[in-house]
Length: 231
Image (cartoon, rainbow, N blue to C red; front, top):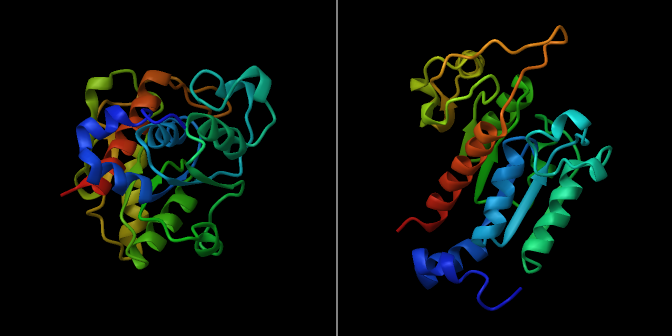
């Protein structure tokens, strides 16, 4: 790590802000199209402890939108690839790779040591609601990414409490599930109010654009950075 690596971050946040970033523990759960961009942004700004959670491996269809996805990494675990990439960005950052899928039973073990902030980039509703409920029970701040697929207009991306999101079908389904379980719906979400485009194949796979999924991840990382550096 060069002495001036975080000079531009320090110019914005000051010495105290940079120290907070270096001391912070942030977990990224889901390291695909959204999570990979969030994780790299955290490393580049100077977050000192990053936990990466995802049991998935790279497939050729991921290459259009995921930082961990290259022809040379097909078949490899996403968290391992991102961990190596982060270490190359900043060797002083502690990276914990958890190559597993999170659920209600393993959340406590996977998210240990306890993070200061969590970025939820899971795209499966059961695991997403399990994580959100666990974070609320344990009073851990977080931001949750809603549906980024089937969108093309970056100007329609918003940050708002889940309770007030509109248009997004994933947000509606997550809100319904969480309401049934008595969860607090006031946590921040990254979502788009653009109606989903037509872009599904017979296997229910959805079209997605790196400029949109990447912005979701960067905005989620920005929420984490703002929380850590708040005065």
